Image 1 (spheres, rainbow, N blue to C red):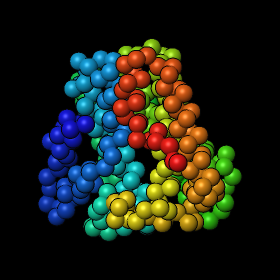
Image 2: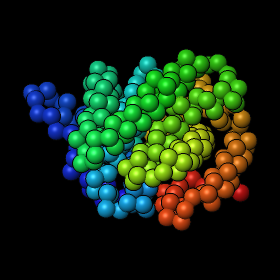
Image 3: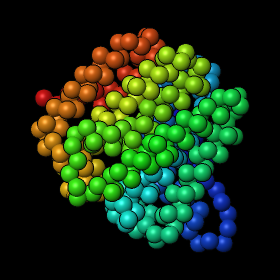
Image 4: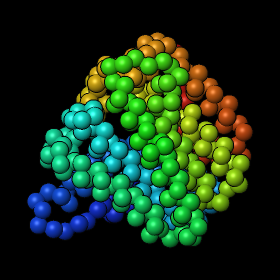
Amino acid sequence: MQRFENYLKSHLLKVSSFHPCYEEALSAMLDAGGKRFRPQLLLEIVEANEPLLYDSALPVALALEVFHTYSLVHDDLPAMDNASLRRGHETLHVKYDEATAILVGDALNTEAFLLIAKSPLRDDVKIKLVEILAYNGGSAGMVLGQAIDCYFENQKLELKQIEVLHQNKTAKLIAASLQMGAVIAGLPKDVERALYDFGLDLGLLFQVQDDIIDVTQSQEVAGKTTNNDENKNSFVTILGLDKSLQYADNLAKKLEDKLESFDKNTKRALSKAVAHYLWRHK
């Protein structure tokens, strides 16, 4: 992923004005690091199937990271999680102010679609990519999940409802990353669908492991505010730690089984990207 990291560093947002911190704030959270998991998923699929399109896919991978970062900036706001630490740095509303954080999130959201529109891909491909990101990141996807999460804070949901919450809030954008890679690579529709379904399960595993981290690691180790989910509907608050670990193991086994259905190149790419998440708790 060093190629992507170099690309990101050389394409941080530049908007000159007399505002004292706006340009700095636009890039602060992107430049702070992160797992880069969503762009990795997209790029692994492209490289495994159409490596000559890798460079053309970089702006779309960056769009995913920019869009994801917008969601983190808004998620950390006082009206939502009211978090003070993200990626080992002060959150934007703490470092600057709440209005700046809101506006930076707005800017990153729209910048993601501009990056796709300007990417060196066919117009029909770009339209499909915009559709996928808008659907999974918007009103019927990530935003819906966040709305459920905020509305039902301090109200205990059932496991099936928790799964719906996190399928939308977290899993759909991860699934979209794989689907977008498939679209760029021109993979058949059945493979595109299988990758999306794989991503939904992967997103739930990603979330339950994140919930486990929240109660087992300090914020210094995690690089973000932890022990902040007591009033939220996380897997750990509903199932407890031991059952959450078992839930994660079951999902990991399910994903390992699903890996076998993909061709050799795609299977290798997925295994490379998700090996860390398939680790079993003993």
